[in-house]
Length: 341
Image (cartoon, rainbow, N blue to C red; front, side):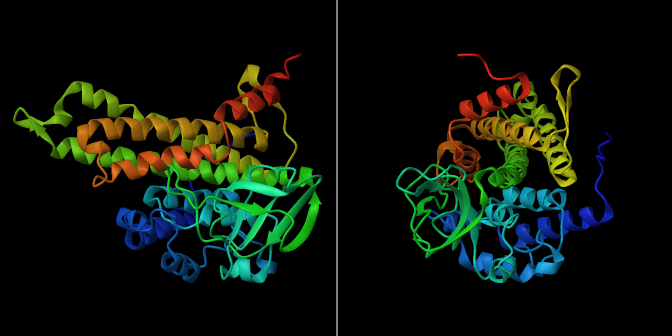
């Protein structure tokens, strides 16, 4: 099966619209001002005016009918600006929700990426501090629970609005069996991967700008080969993550059964590709921000320099799913079969 690597005219328009919007409305200073909670209500209001919250919902529900491949472009723009709004999680949750106020953006939705514990609590929901509705697994069921958000989060590396949420208290709806959650989680992984691509790109740009401006021995430090080499291969890492993320979105949009043959490097199952994209872009964002921060020298570790904002989020956003080693092991089992005890 052939994957179209180029963007359509409509997708180019989407990318241009959201890149321009977030560049204007959410410079890095907005993310800085939103710490430590990591949420800017005024910015969310502007996102609502743009029609972004419901753009992935069906037209019959009042949404825009955009594909997951389209939404990937939006998530990249969110990542490039590290915009303090839960748009990625909201768009992921609306894969199974069509409440009018959620589609309109008047209420916010999020995804509990881990099942509820024995007490019926979803631990550290990625945007649980600010969302009105949480979708997740409780026992054998996929449920959506509407309750008042706490609007407070524990201090965390990425200044994310994390919070524990109850899977049983509030307006609780059973949406289906627990197995129906996998497409929601896959959607979340792909959109999070896209946002990590955006962070990587922003870190590279920030690093290049700094090494071209910072001088040592009378010349820009960007003229030193060791610095050039450290930045020159990052576009390959970033573009590789982007292509893998788009392929995962394409596969999930198709919603057709597909076999994986790692021997022939022929992977077309959407869920497999979603895990691959999430892991690859997580590592890529960590590496891109690591190099950019260190090329800033000691300044990179100081709070007044913006690179540390990207550095922290590149790690925080990718760790909310849990230990990456667990995701690696699950992916290995999917591709190669489980290892006998």
